[in-house]
Figure 1: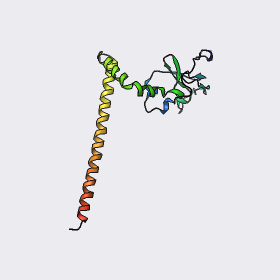
Figure 2: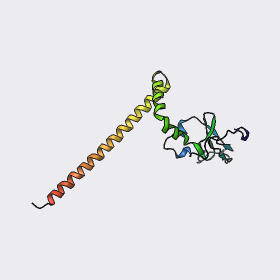
Figure 3: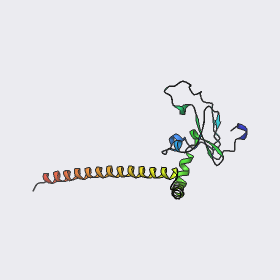
Figure 4: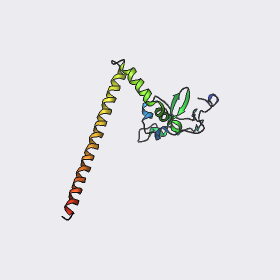
Amino acid sequence: MTENSIKKPLVKKPIGSIWDSKHRWAREIKCSLEPSGPVTCELCGTSHPKLPEMPTEEGDYDIDDYIYHIYDLFGYQVVGECCGLVFDRMFKAWGRAFALAYIKDTCETPTTLDFTGLMITVVHGVNEAKEQIECATESTEKIRSALKHLISFEEEKKPN
């Protein structure tokens, strides 16, 4: 977006970087990558400077040091590096409703790749939850065992 076409910002200051999110929005939400800048976030009005040119030779470097993550949010250009946490706020407000609607819509077309992806995600999530439950159960059993030994040790120490 050119400086002349920038919309009036919706918020007074940056919301927070997408990299501060506890979620994986940067990998999940479609975005365009602005390789050099400068770029302006239309959500908060922050102008981001031109970044260094990306190295052309192969090497060990982080591509995120050379690009901006640009998202379209209701027609506003959002720069992930300053306002990416807007997606966390949206998720907190509407995540459950969106998830239920997505599941319902996706299940109506069980022959699509979206449905397959959803099922893989659900199975993976259930397996992760099962592992966490088993780990918690194992920890609880260890605590119970330790308490039994402590109680029996204390009872042995009591004079008759």
